[in-house]
Image (cartoon, rainbow, N blue to C red; front, side, top):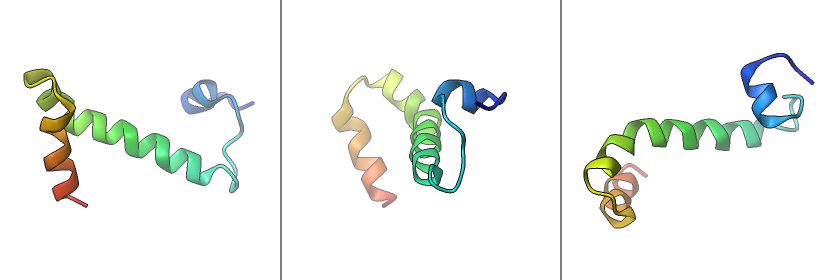
Length: 56
């Protein structure tokens, strides 16, 4: 077990095997930070889906 903040949240060591899990976690965190304010203005998943998919 690691003593980092992410280690306490994830409860596993972050090695090369867990790199994909870390990427998905951090990607979701960043999307929440970027589009969270927009969701609070218009609480609809459909309103967020368009701008998110435009970036893909």
